[in-house]
Image 1 (cartoon, rainbow, N blue to C red):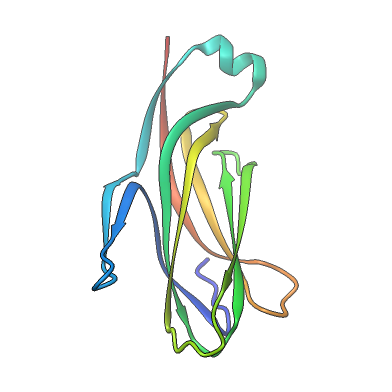
Image 2 (spheres, rainbow, N blue to C red; image 1 turned 180 degrees about the vertical axis):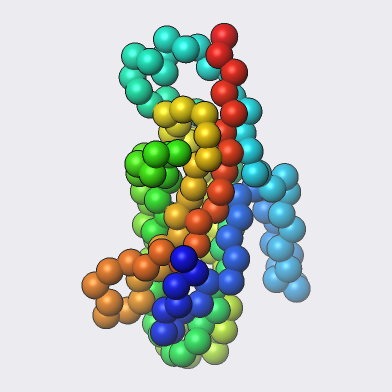
Length: 151
């Protein structure tokens, strides 16, 4: 899976409830790393619509290394259910100033919901598209276990 791009290298990604970046050192603190969600749901709600939106604030935190000079690149996150069906997508274009010597890029994406279809192992697929490339390349999958209790 961890396919390599020529200009951008994925270092790490994770999901947490919040982050804090120190303005002086640029160090990041990660709070409440999320590996699983325990959800209480009314069975009829899930059966009727097939998919349920769960309100939850979380952040997808990523670190990328710039291997050679680029001015921009794109990152797409695909939220995949246990069957591999994409329930949500979000795309982000990162701009790098021309005069920058930046070697590492951190991307923090905040969201306030997740769609679910059933209990099981979900994945957030991290995909990168380099400049002048046609397609995104999957570079990592963040696992997220969803446990459901029916009421």
